[in-house]
Image 1 (cartoon, rainbow, N blue to C red):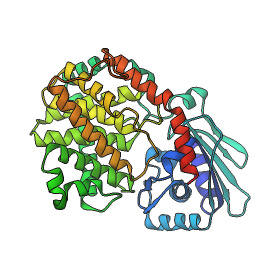
Image 2: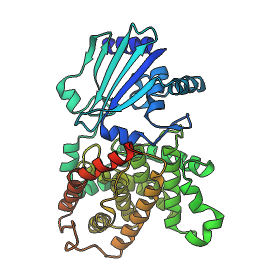
Image 3: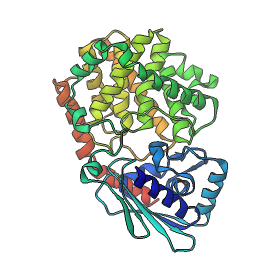
Image 4: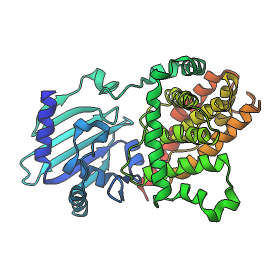
Length: 409
């Protein structure tokens, strides 16, 4: 810890007035950073993010690296970008999650290079003035880097829908009450997205009086608008935090908000909401384990599948209905591509929520897509595995093509 503190101090000292910042990123990082809003800046993309990291970032904050953001720091970072001091390039690495950042001092006498690999907060190498200050062990760099990294993909894959449901419905309530933190955080994003004009304003537009004749006052409209509003705010640079799922704030929003919306509309009890959210979160984590950390498959497919299961539980459904909801979702929006994190994600989130409620309603009515259809199988775990294969293997070429299109615009 002393060594880490020392090199963090050295990095901050060197990067106060860098003459240049050179960042090499993997294809997935480039794709997912090009169009996303950076909180508190009114800007999008990796250039301003890298500049902010240099002027006020603190690696000890982990995923809250920009917690010390202030207007003065934003001004400094914007000036660096305007002066063309930040260079972002595509790395040749085959790693899906990789960032190499080098900062040089204004007098060119000092430099610091940091490499992140495997996880978003996994610092595997730090070199200051040519001297290695920190090197992560292979075990750490290949698996997990901090106490926050609690999801083991292999373990998530080995779970089953049956085990998840048994756990969520029988575990003592006090052991899962913390899940209500996701209600507090993500509802705050909903309110922010409905109140202010973020991004494409998908949520606000769905609830606008002028559109009432189109969408009406229904459970579906309510759930779609609330979830999209939170995504509008999140992806357009709102500074409020989101409760994530599988490392994604947008997926955390899509896992929780539709369940919260239906719970409010149906006057569900606090315990019902807690257990429904637990089902929703864990189903999404289970499916995500089959896809890996980054995929060409849009994360809202996974997250909205989880929320569909939570909604089924809220409406009195059991194991068979939850399996039907997963199959209905898999037979519907599998193949929705991820073309990067951006304000337009709110549109996909809204579509995912619409499918989530549709799948839940059909499942509760005893309707389930047949195993004769596409990648659906009688066994729910085989169905989930098929979905994972499509997203992690089958869509790799699509991922490369999407990146080519994005970087050539």
